[in-house]
Amino acid sequence: MSGHSKWHNIQKTKGAADAKRAQAFTKIAREMIVAVKEGGSGNPDSNSRLATVIAKAKAANMPNDNIKRTIEKALGAGNAENYERITYEGYGPNGVAVIVETMTDNRNRTASEVRHYFDKYGGKMGATGCVSWSFDKKGVIVIDNEDGDFDEDTVMMDALDAGAEDVEKEEESFTIYTDPENVAAVANALTEKGYSLLSAQEEMIPQNGYVKLEDEGSRKNMEKMLEMFDDNDDVQNVWHNWDSEE
Image (cartoon, rainbow, N blue to C red; front, side, top):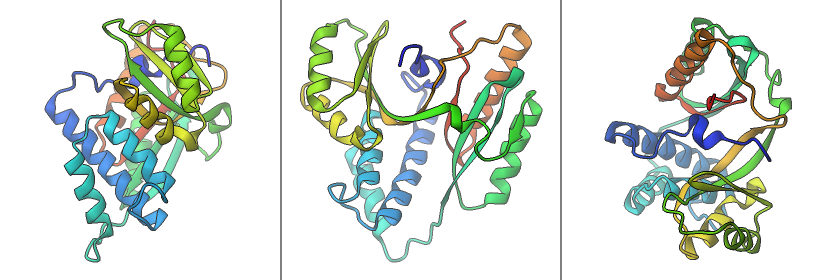
């Protein structure tokens, strides 16, 4: 998994403003509602998709009351919210591979907006499968180690005992890789051991690592494109193979 620097590349939630946090909670709530409806249950023990979203919500510090209310809302007979998952693929400046995961109640609006962002910033939306073949789906959990409290050997042992596949040490964190189906179980086990999680979710990891953009104009366009995606309420996640730590 060497070269995976996604936390530094696109995850900007640590220390985020209240408005950004509220938007993040809204997106997670939408994902939770869909997970309940698709899984036919509000019980994470019997709905693995919901369990994964709850792990993601807890890592984002979403209050338990919010999680409970969202599940109850999804189960309510009067809930008319009807979202569908749609994934778009394309290329950013200089051919950077980009995957945009959305959850929308209006696919025409979302497709138009996503295409606009690609076009405006030097990219191009492509056909389904044009870049996803070069990514692997993995469960990714990021442990906070800003204070340097945890040593690599201990984290490695605890993570593997919890069912993880691999561990990477970064400057102020540890990145734990799991099977996508095991995110919730591993995240819960690590939380019980006293670790603070910065992120816990399924992610798309570039198979061949991350690429650099050599010119400043391309880097600025890529940054602006990602900001536009991030600010769009329909966009849940954006995965790419750009190394922004240049």
